[in-house]
Amino acid sequence: YETVHTGTGTGDYNGTVSLTTTPNGSTFDLKDGARGGHRTLDMNQGTTGTGTLFNDADDVWGGGRQSAAVDAHYGAAVTWDYYKNVHGRNGIRNDGAAAYTRVHYGNAYVNAFWSDSCFCMTYGDGANNAAPLTSLDIAAHEMTHGVTSNTAGLRYSGESGGLNEATSDIFAAAAEFHAANSSDPGDYLVGEKVDINGDGTPLRYMDKPSKDGASHDYWSKTLRRVDVHYSSGPANHFFYLLSEGSGAKTVNGVSYNSPTYDGTAVAGIGRDKAEKIWYKALTTYMTSTTDYAGARAATLSAAGDLYGAASAEYQAVNAAWAGVNVK
Ligand code: ASN
Ligand code: ZN
Image (cartoon, rainbow, N blue to C red; front, side):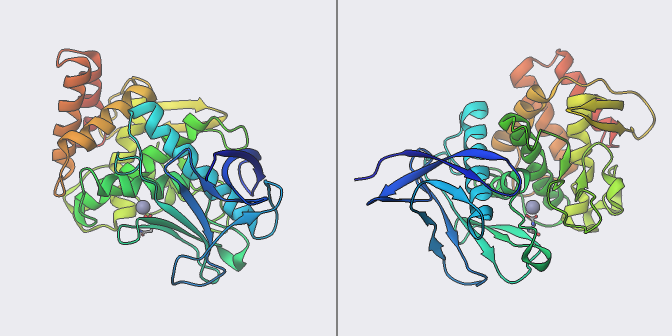
């Protein structure tokens, strides 16, 4: 029989955290019976198959090969809890079933990805196999690709691809804030705990996406031809403006300065409401071919449903889209 057990683990990015594990004889498997049976497995630098389920003698995890597993297992749990507690969503497909997680994929592989075909998330170990891409926001980003795939199904190219990517960045930030982990407080940055660029900078910035040197801050006709990780910029920027408003602001010790397309100031409505609006838009109004104009319409419909078409929230959605040149 299986029981839900609570162990502890120390990985690379989250301090010492609780981990939900499963007793296996006198040992413990890295399997989360409280969240659909989510398992974390060791690819041992390989690139095929499902890998080997992590197992530990004393349920105190971390060090060596276990560190990346601790972070990824924790990241999947906090993302599961975010969707459950905030949106009432029971797992990626809303059916209570878990995906699984593969860590130590490939040799010095500097990426992480979601796959519909395995219904699983996979993480490389980064440069020199020394910087696993297993931070909380990256885990939430990849798991959210599964949610998007099973809801709106935003096609992964053109403007819908940018919206797909932005959805992963938006809920990565949201899950990070929700987890309230003191080693990785919430922020509007993506990948800031993993030195993916090699110079200490985050991978993406939601307040002003162009700070990464490639993402677009505003919608334009050319956006449809831009890589989806850069055409996500205007939607990430919309979400920041809707949450926090334009101009200078410090949140959890991180300073932001968010511009608008024509310089008109935008007032934020708070992250909680912005998350509710994006989630409802994603799960009820967006489809595989939704573009930026469609995302504006979807979020306005969602805001209307949630707060009324005469509400300040509805007007803020309109203003935040104007702030990124979607009118
Ligand atoms: N890490 C990337 C992502 O999740 C992998 C990809 O390009 N799909 O966006
Ligand atoms: Zn992505």
